[in-house]
Length: 403
Image: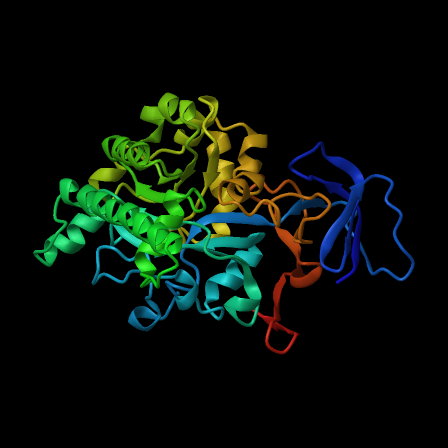
């Protein structure tokens, strides 16, 4: 799709804002961003005068499509709680693009999401990055796999403790992860030996993906809340040499200096929940600011459906109210989650070469009263809000439907 969005207050995120700027999109990709962009003849033009023009937001940790809203048991595919090691499982295989959450995401300016298995298992499975609009997950795909999801703390020990199986304690959860990586190390050695001798080798889907984590190809997304569990996450990562990303990190502020020194990023949130369990006792909107000031790379998450996906920007807004720098807040829902999850070559900012995922707001998106007016994915308009009526383009019929 070709498109020029002109005359708006353009916020590229990775550069200075441009008042009266233009974003030029050709064949679905951004080719130029600036104040004096020449728009080729015949290019459709959208006048954004009076509005703010930003990249689509990026949700770094959500369950859209695998934990469907208003579906109950039938739409719950988040956790395969029958095997503590689910590394071979793929969130990709469980996503329903018809989940109501995808339309909600667009209304909140969210155009990309990293969708992850849940936290019921010590090793939950492979994550996937998708656009928030399309007929099938294959059409929506940005990257797969993006990372491997793992969980420490209350959730896995409760799930398997209730089954009277390993793991039922924090010791057991860490042991399951440690055992899995030792098996993966042995698997890599056997695979290399077979290749050197040109012998057949029986592949194992679970160990193949863990070998990719050990080789540094995929980060380890570690669900963890308490500071002691974060310390365990860092200990395991040091032991096996893989790249860890702290997910949730409720008490990450207590180890902020350690996380910054190790350059371990934190995907923090959800931030609007009650303190419903012990692990959340220190949940606070002040924590993102503490982490950021310590030098920790930061992304904010809704953990949808724990917090509705379209409230992503509101979490950033209230984190600003509690001390997070506004520029850092915008980066925490655009460029930084994309960079942490390895998809910043496609999304997260307005710069040449990236996908034409652009949102026109009626004001500063960090103002809680601002609204996403028009949303474009790869240069195609997929959502609009005019005369008080939200309209989502139907990906199946390429027509518009009210939502």
